[in-house]
Amino acid sequence: MSRLAPPAHAWRPWRLYTTSVEMVLANNYDGKGTEEEPFLVDWLADDPENPQVWPGFVRWLQLSLIGFATLSLTAASSAYGAAQPDLESEFHVSGEVTLLGISLFVLGFGAGPLIWSPLSDIYGRRTMYIFSFGMLTLWTSVTIASQNIASVLVFRFLAGFFGGVPLSSAGASVADMFPLRQRGIAIAVFVSTAFLGPAVGPITGGFIAEKAGWRWIEGYLGIFSGAVTLALILLATETCAPVLLRRRASRLSKDTGKVYRYRWDGGATTSPLQLLSRSVLSPWKFLLEPIVVVLTLYMSIIYGVVYLNFAAYPVVFQELRGWSQGVGSLAFLGIVVGVILALAFVVFFVNPRFIATASRRGGPAIPEDRLEPAVIGGVAALIGLVGFAATASPHVHFIAPIIFGAPVGFGVVLIFFAVIGYLVDAYSVYAASVLAANAFVRAAFAAAFPLFTVPMYENLGVHWASAIPAFLILACIPAAMILQRYGTTIRAKSKWATRAEKELKAIVAARQAAMLSTKITEEA
View 1 (cartoon, rainbow, N blue to C red):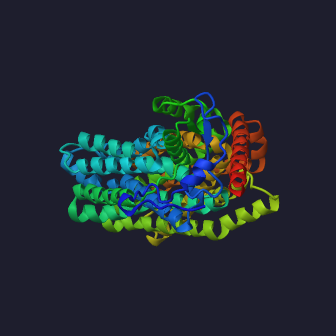
View 2: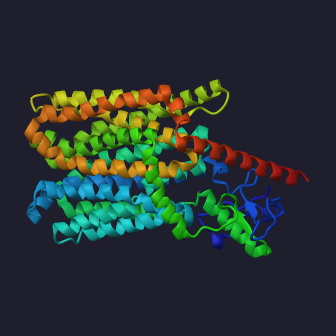
View 3: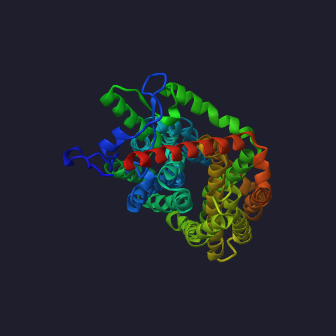
């Protein structure tokens, strides 16, 4: 099969590879080419336009772009925290009010996916990434000119709301490009960047605030997101199979006069408004599923604890120890080290073990095989939080609580890696809706936790206030252990998990039949 590259003057980054026109036209499509029975378009065997058969360096380049976008977004959520003293002084407001800038940003990128995720299935991942980061750059830059705290808070919410596409669509992009056996490492890279950002943000923000003030924090974040926007425009490639195949069906219909449609759109067209309304309403029904409720609560508490630390660390390292903003923010390096170690652990231990487990089963692994890292991560995070609570006092050497940040970062990444992988495998065709509901709920927790952190430390003292997150994690660890042991039975009784399994099998069977038909056509 030949690959016809676009002419140099018509280079289009969203379409790096083209499939032979002759092969596309000659394929034996299901259907009759009429409105009632349109030809059904799907990938051909070894189709060059299929993102899953692209060269590895192209797929990893795309994942790197998404990773940098996620890093930029999550760093913007936490770097703002370093601006608090300046904001309080300039606008004469309390710390609780300025903290709303973190909470509203996080709430925004939790709510945004309910709209942006389904739109990426209509207009394409690339389009939505560029739109999202263009808007993030705009609202972050506008924040610099704010003359009152209300403007700062409104612009922060809008920046989070419009900028949240990487958090909602990265998992879908991974599924677009990577087969099941390669997906674990790709998910681990995404999760790592999602937690590196919140840890790195306060470090850069702390030194900028110390030297140049809060407006330059927003300026730095605007430059960062602007650079990512430019990289996306120049290098991002469309990966969404439904979008690519709908475009192919449209071209075929125009060129031949027959009616072609993407296979899984069926015989009827669906308007963008219908798809959007269905996708916005769809996630909430999954919150009635026991598996989704338990794991969403688990992830939400973990996420809340992560953002609680952005309010707790300044208390422990700046207020109690008298460190400056810049030096105090370096305490987050412990969490950064833990995140990096977790990524290495997944690459060199978890993923090979998962592949070996699948081989022993003689077929694909089951979703419960994903959950072992969640148990390990829960125990690691618990050790880190208990250690931090015991050593947070200024009478203990500063290196101790910083070191205990490492198992927290390590554990959080493993938990998210495992649970996201489990939900994707267990709910397959409904995974996007499940993760959208999950993202909104955990963002609500993350928005709320920082608001009560400072009063909690003032009323309970440093040791007990630091211990409360550890108690929450301790209560959550059994959830992963129970699902690891009994998840297969629970899924068999789950309405949506069983339906997802049946629909996925039907899709795989239909796609295999279509590819077999293509091979027969080629041989003929």
